[in-house]
Image 1 (cartoon, rainbow, N blue to C red):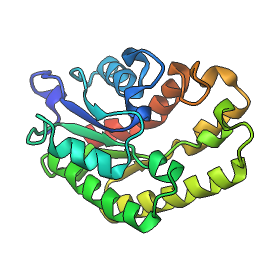
Image 2 (cartoon, helix red, strand yellow; image 1 turned 90 degrees about the horizontal axis):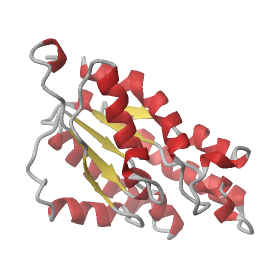
Image 3 (tube, one colour; image 1 turned 135 degrees about the vertical axis):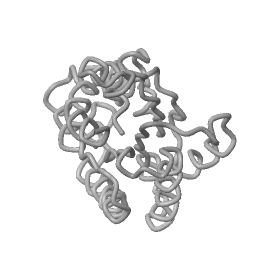
Image 4 (cartoon, one colour; image 1 turned 180 degrees about the vertical axis):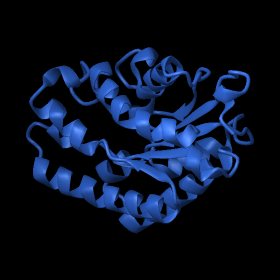
Length: 209
């Protein structure tokens, strides 16, 4: 049922993740969940203010623990986004452990969406190796490792029948357009998140119908 076709009640939205979800180094309004909510509302799919469980530096395990300790752990939502894994890569954590924990998080996201897989949306991990912060590091190795983690989350997302949105290629534009980087030289700017939202919009609108 499309709520927008009945009483225009706003959809509820839960965003799960890390620094890329809270929008580290920019205003909350510039983060992708807030921009996404605003754009969906403009498109006649009203969204209430997002509930966000995300903190800079979190790995999959830390997100799992935070959700289980959250006052939102039993709430149901009309839609859920999940973006997690960059800190597993950054800390050189085991990839098969990531797979196990990502599957758990994906199942948690589905549960928060009241079991409706069409209302869960997974984003790929962006490539921070193109940012100024990565100067002096092995950018090709970072990209390779990000690709390996993304191969895992994409495979498990598709296996679960959940929508997967690849924003990694978009993130690489920060290598040539510095305005896509936040002032800290590592995280995306609001402009970059806006590009992600344009990629997300048609997928989410389809899922909401």
